[in-house]
Length: 408
Ligand SMILES: Cc1ncc(COP(=O)(O)O)c(C=O)c1O
Image (tube, rainbow, N blue to C red; front, side, top):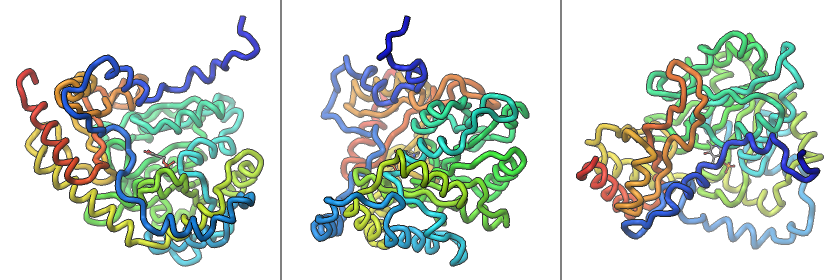
């Protein structure tokens, strides 16, 4: 019999962290060279000088509980950024009713499902659809809110984005929410207007929420900046019903440790989420809100980060461009490289060259559905290009030499 303090079986259903699995895989093997981490998607660039200056100036604010809906200045700065960055009419995004600052997107991707997922949908257990490979917060939120996560494979055949329309009618009928990531992690695929149109048509037919994860929107090698879901919905004349868009300063500003992001979109969902957060959600401290407001208003520091990523992708093209499994992503800062067997490749890269990369299999679920079913990550490794150009060049030279060397 389960004891009173045993963890709930629901906790055991959460997928294991890819980084815990990676430590398990590499733990017993010594690195063949000085280690270089290409595993975590954590930008390694410098922290902009304004962060320290504003924190010093605003330090008195640490003694106060901050407002749950964020300061007017922060919501205004986010609205201003949305209007500048995307094709949006001035009044398309009301900062008072359509924007909520968050502790990074991860918080919202998990918690927002609590106000979206019903007990049942059309008499059945609700489903939450997510791309496979996926970001861990998606299935965690789905399971914690009582829904069944359904892992929809994103493969070469579907241009590395999930094809939700191909799911059975029975699944779509009970779908409460769909996660859509563009640019996607790990594949770096960008959804175009036609892809969003198809998803919005499904959302309107089956009445599910669309949760657009756009935290990589500022990192791209496509000639034009990635289209956002808000602007796609408005360009299509559809309005923002059931649409929430998540973004953050973690990748754009290289401030992953600041824990600052936002959700924007459907005022009904924003109001419900704000009320829920006011009981159970974490606030962002006042001084960090002041830093965040400045960061959304400043593009100079973002341009510096973008230049580093651009150089890294040029280096990747030079060092790896001739390898058969290499593909230049349109957005984000990962290479999603097909090497035959990602687990074997990750072990070999560690053992022979001290390179830490994540096997694609660890980022995806075995129960993936789609034209190609199963775990779509098996042949891939994910390589995070988040170091400076010098380290990136050294790492990718080692990588090319292992992948083209004897025994491969
Ligand atoms: C796809 C994706 N979504 C969300 C996040 C979470 O980012 P944040 O720091 O904004 O919580 C990450 C972080 O790695 C991510 O890769």
